[in-house]
Length: 301
Length: 274
Image (spheres, each protein chain N blue to C red):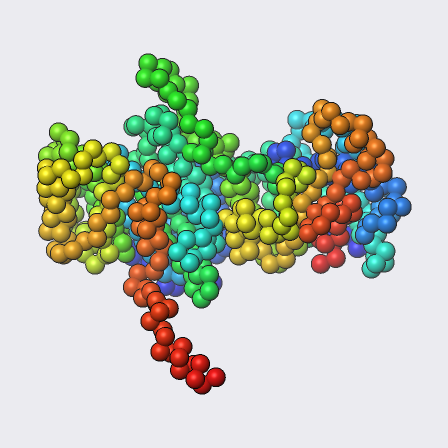
């Protein structure tokens, strides 16, 4: 096996690591002292050591701290754990089981009220991986999720050197733009919008916005919004959408109003998970549209 | 014809490895059971096996010492069907040694055994619920006691915070990096008597634990699942006398695949005849 077709844009490693053997990948995962658990989340270097014959699809969870990005990942993992599959794809493997479990653990801390500040930490590795296989076609999917600490994005607002180190945003295949829906009504709205604008503007100036990526605006914590029909709420929501559209120079970015914490019959959350597991540009074949071919086949038979 | 094979018995703490060995030795050492395998000769030193047997017969908890070095077991098993005798070499590592792998703390002897083993007998302790951390009952905190709670409950994850089934997948993942995909692998779900199902063991794992099942499907090609009820009781069970009677009949321990069998040599038979 080789790693041809892997997302070279992710590579930020010395050339000699481009063709790792099974043994040295294992070594790098096991021996790495900075990760306390086997199969913990990966950093910019060892994410490229993962051997696969699939081009990874990079999904970046973008947003400042306390927007529920980690909870979102924890919920995705939770559903995969329980069901073993999603959107016609079977779970086959992950290089980051412990990394996912840590997200679930933090979600638990958050639910218990233990973790308002101690969320995904700056120093924590951001990358999580999923290897999926289509139930019938056996097509393989290699998904890499970037769940970076919100504080790191905050650093990007003021620190060029931190901003320029980030190799992932620019090369995202999909980017999930997280917004705290509850904040749209709060006194902090104006401040939040300014910070977001500054962050996006700085990324754009450095040509680091993934203009070609598939974009999703995630209005998280939607359950905490008291009145979604409130005029001011609607206006603020629209302003945020307009800000993203202006920065990405695109007219219609899909919007998703979710509560990433709850898994009880949470259709909106499951819908977005399903769309992330489905490959990009996958044309869903509606069996009802295949009636002509079916009829021809029957006549031939 | 005599062959030598190495078998690595793997499992997290309390997965039932030593209980199974104790039951195996107690039931099979004297032969005459008509089971697929019989013990042809006694090993030169049976001290450890006898201690495990004694615990099993007396229905007491196996008293393990604190030494992390594995107890080496050798069994000569004879198959009447193939007319072969197998010198089976088994290290009985403590579950904690396997659990340490999850913290990147790998004992040299484990790595060596993984590279040399011919087959793997893997034990998973049946737990009623496969619970993730955030499915645990939510702790209600009164605002005034919240500060105290924060101090008591660390937000640093420990191995015990990783769900047990995921710990097992992580361990399988490690094993997969060390052994060939086609290595004979018998996966035993212990405490099977607590599971009420009409499904075969493999269907049960597939239905109840698809995450683990899928992982195994995609990484190991020579796998068989077994339900194992070696102890057959909870310690201090009030049906002590009934279990004593079953012990004498050699019917206390059993194996389940799609039906119940008292031949607890079946997993070994699968592993060594592959």
